[in-house]
Length: 378
Ligand code: ADP
View 1 (cartoon, rainbow, N blue to C red):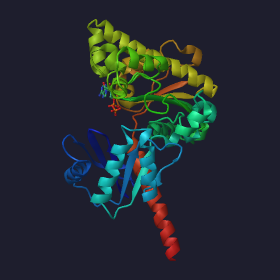
View 2 (cartoon, helix red, strand yellow):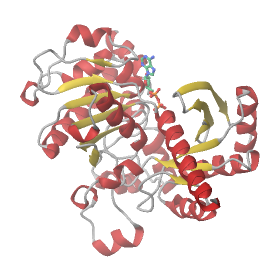
View 3 (tube, rainbow, N blue to C red):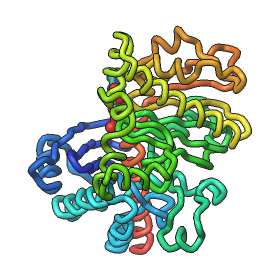
View 4 (cartoon, helix red, strand yellow):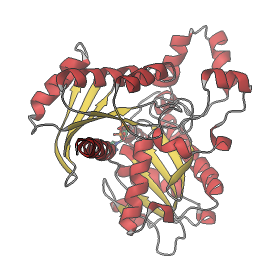
């Protein structure tokens, strides 16, 4: 099936056309949305792609709340449910909806599917997803940990197992996605059991411009001390913190490593804090899983930065982790086992491919719907 995978963000729309019969990428394009609507951006992207007839559209949707534990065909009811979840993901769900509406308008006869960043985390148990807050307030606002980057963590889980020629249920994994957003996931026998991200994608690891874990008192004290309003605080935590805020220099890991090598102290501290946080969660998830078969690293930083992988995995022999430094140094943007031969816990790099999973889910749901309709017709 020829599927269009849509990742609609606030500043750009990324489109890929994938032939799911052979997992083949036919074309991809990114269109900036500054000054134009999502309708216009997607129309322009489709024009540029000049692809064969599209038979299904799959949309990345960031927040599925506790409503969606898997991908679904988009109906009016699904759209209303995603709208209802906008209060939990005000930066993401509204633009994802704009992408859905644009495609319903541009490709009205093509079935569409929503693939949620939260869905893979639906198996996380209450002990891991519940915040220790008063239960009536938590229930009223559905305050809990949801986890994000689920499509990436699911891809890494399925791909790791496929590379071993065994089912995902054979492995306990710690999957680590290090891009602009960063998260780690504890995966027990193929199912997520804990994640570093919380009610929103702010919690957990240090990211390009987000701080990850913070003492919550810092947040309300800042309102008072800096006389910030909520919008300014939101901006500070989503766009001014993380590697960028820590270093005062850049949110780009390539740039920070370069500056560190020239002696920049703020760059060194930013990278140290980044790596320390990842190591803390490797230890935490190792305990939650009672041991892991492998750590699977991905995302722009994880796939390309041997120096970061080396710093993260240093001195973890107690957890059975030991890198083959020359395999690590040679690995850039490709699948590889980086572990020393005797290491009990393997360390792999697997480039993520969220669009491929979006396309596969889309094709599978449409095929089963068509089968169902055919069945009714007979
Ligand atoms: P996103 O999360 O937006 O998809 P990426 O996964 O591309 O972003 O991650 C962005 C980060 O990855 C940046 O810090 C950047 O320095 C790093 N990165 C991306 N590509 C490369 C590369 N080819 N070599 C080194 N670092 C890279």
